[in-house]
Amino acid sequence: MHKITILQMIGYGNRTRTQAEVVRLFQEKYPELPPISQGTMIIQIENVLFSDESTFTLHGHVNRRNYRYWLRENPHWMRELHTENPEKVKAGIIGENIIGPFFIAGKLNG
Image (cartoon, rainbow, N blue to C red; front, side, top):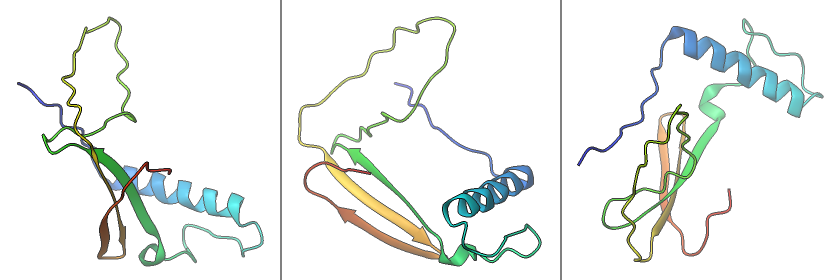
């Protein structure tokens, strides 16, 4: 059985584009803040919490509902499903610190 591993290359070009996007989003969301430029960034990355959530089973299957595959033809993929109760977990990173994991009962709502 082959499992797909989804990776994102992080390089200088990715980082620069991401920083510019973060600056733009903060300026849109908080227009009352002083202007932010790449050279004098007021927002310190150490103060930003990055978080995510996932649902998985004890058989090792992770819910990948947010993944999209754009193909020219239908690959006729099949996925084995287990009917056990899935585990739900949320965690985050702020600065160099990991927050969590927190296991949650019920549905995860963003």
